Length: 109
Length: 117
Image (cartoon, rainbow over all chains, first blue to last red; front, side, top):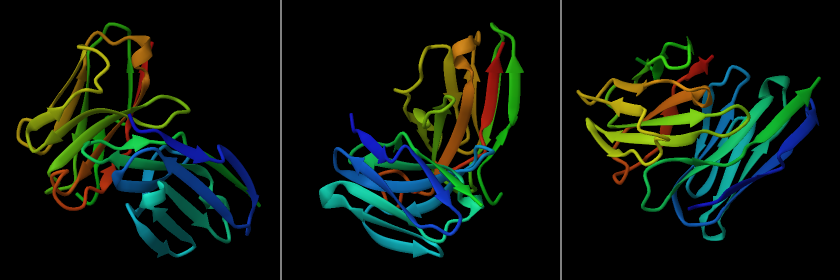
């Protein structure tokens, strides 16, 4: 099956700093989503981005499908950005999302 | 409703009891998915419905797990004779269209945290 690797596994930032999270996947996909799982466990949709670049406020994401990776950029981080960030993909021909192992982000004031 | 809802939010069961977890998808969403999330891990796929048809149940861990969506909207995940290893958060997600037609972005509910004693 498809492999999804996220890096780094853990990240600690000072409030106001910028960061880049990476997601590598092993096969072609027809869906890639970035989620933020908050401390209460809710998975919040950040981006639906099987290819290209999108921006939403302080967050932006880029997926290069031909090279099988996606990047999530967080600028001017805030304490409310803390939590686990998941990349998830749907392999071409499959139905379900397959999740990476996540990046745990802690933003300290 | 505006989003996916799940009930109950928390469930404590004694080993051997049967439990039923409910999911209300976003109105009009054709596809519905169940995932299981163990502590410290990412969600893992259990089963998938398109309308009332269960098209994929390859992720169900044992025959004690059963899911249904009889009218193509609300879904129930049932676990019979619960075991301690069933303790996890059970997440439901829905997407607007059939998986192979158009955008297949999935939206998740808040989950049901199941603890089996």
